[in-house]
Length: 578
Image (tube, rainbow, N blue to C red; front, side, top):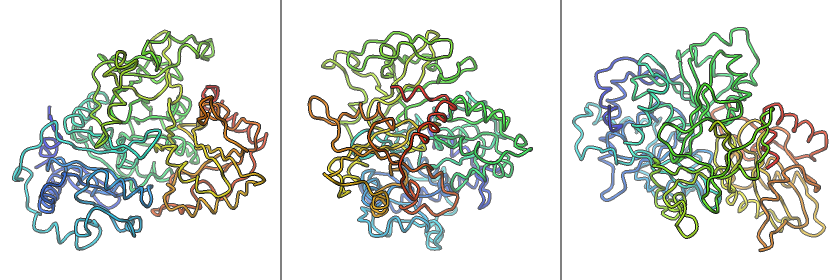
């Protein structure tokens, strides 16, 4: 069994079966290995003396993405996936923070870089669909993977720097080594029985860990092919699956719901898929998906950093996530004392009867695969912190997620412990959105927090304390949002609650728990955008004015009743009662 990703890439040499396929064409496994070797040699030539061996990749899901992942593996370098939904200084910060010595991008994303103060000189920003890029690669076209010079990568060599968000500050870059990624790939090969004739359809963005860790890595480890979709398309999903003969796909967030929202067709079950693997589909929609498309979905839970995971087994009851993998020591504990909490009591309808005593933070008390955050020792220490002066829980991995555990040992998700939001598969930090909304002149105070989405993940809600006598002007607010260059495509609030003053605790801090608990069921006026924009079908990202719908309107009692019905329909009404 290969211990590094480099070994898996080298093993492709001489394999002339299809390895990477897309709407742009097909590369064999051998061509992938050869192309990776050429790019690794080019990177070695361009790498400045003393620079961190990091490659920033700002691409959609195009063949160059897995080619550069494979090149990084051979070169002992790390790929930092750069999120194209980030904007302005925040995008520049991501590139600078990960110490990228090289940036790989395409013409479609060049407007995102215009005017930014980058730490990378122009000659090390490579545009893959520019003829000059092919000229650069030309001298290295005959490089063999086993002819590369330099020290051979080891299991401890950094392979990925992928961003995840916390409750405050900028996104953190989690480290994933070649050894951990290879082990994850081999584990999923065993779990799903990956075969050499399989095709893994990668429609989730490759700057996320999901597509790379759960899609590309097990395909490489199992000798399977990958098929790429530039960006997720609900209407293009089945045509792609049939065209590429895909047998497996990964998903996060609302992707499953977007697929279920497409018009049903008599031949929906006419597809080669064996399974889908991901998170946040929910038990109700997973069942609907299997019934409509004939494809079982396997839901899992895993912290982005690799510190804890839960596996769904055939006997997992509806509403539960699953159990720990054999040998893992996961528990639900009191976040203040570290004491394990009592098992949950559920009634005949599966409703939690003792939430106050059963809900706590999920921790991994055993050995975890968490490898820290890049250049962020404080955040790394916080993940493995001790409680009560370090005497309780030191060295444990604290997930930051709330769970309860039923009498049979199955774990159930119950919310988040801090102010992180997960919107349409993106992790957002409330503080960063607050910093943007604080520029809104009529507001004297701003608080941003998550409300559960009726289907999957979270939605953004903002409380605005307005100046004396000021009224909320929805058109003015939309114009303000559109003018903010650093407002990401998923940051705009779905709900806006207007108050004269923000609620505070006894220590004069904003009472976020009270805001979250009330959500949109509050006495003050609430404004909302009834429709949330889904993944863009076109190659062009939506303009800022389209990020959360084109306008806000008053949230009525009828709106509230209809929305609550959606929560009940998807089995998520209990998340509103926390």
